[in-house]
Length: 248
Image (cartoon, rainbow, N blue to C red):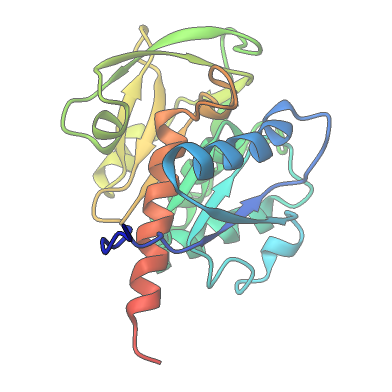
């Protein structure tokens, strides 16, 4: 007997810009292909990835037209300006955005400069600057796991589904100054370690703008993407669906 039922429509393929200087020596970069395969197979979230080198990201049109932007670890980037441009375009254009590790650091740096008007720097690339937003951590988190507390009601809380989570890091820099100014201009600092240091930031009112100092792409096995990565994929798919619905 022939079935007359209709299968559920396939979600659209979403284009994702992977911003960073791709390297086989950066573990998070090598994990991305497996994560994307798992998203397609387990969650039916199909992402079409394009790597955009930091120098190429300096072109304001480099990430326009994508359904998501993910600024991956691997700092110092060859072009800090390029990474900051990609973040700004995603923020201003409402493109779903995820920044992890170096992407988190530069998301805060972009917001501080372009929204708050602060003349701040990153100690990794400009250690002698008068005003550092991103400084060396008191204790390096390279290769560490640590607990992160998540604020109830935040995007991070909705995504992760818990007020506490244990996450993996591979970084040695983080924010310590001007945090009240960032908050006053609308950035929500929604995750902290057990000492109160900022580990997650998000932008209320944006379709999806999330940055984590920890690296969700390193969590568990590549066959089971972290909730943060799945949330970015869902946001990208929704963005692609809205784009497909626009009249030509």
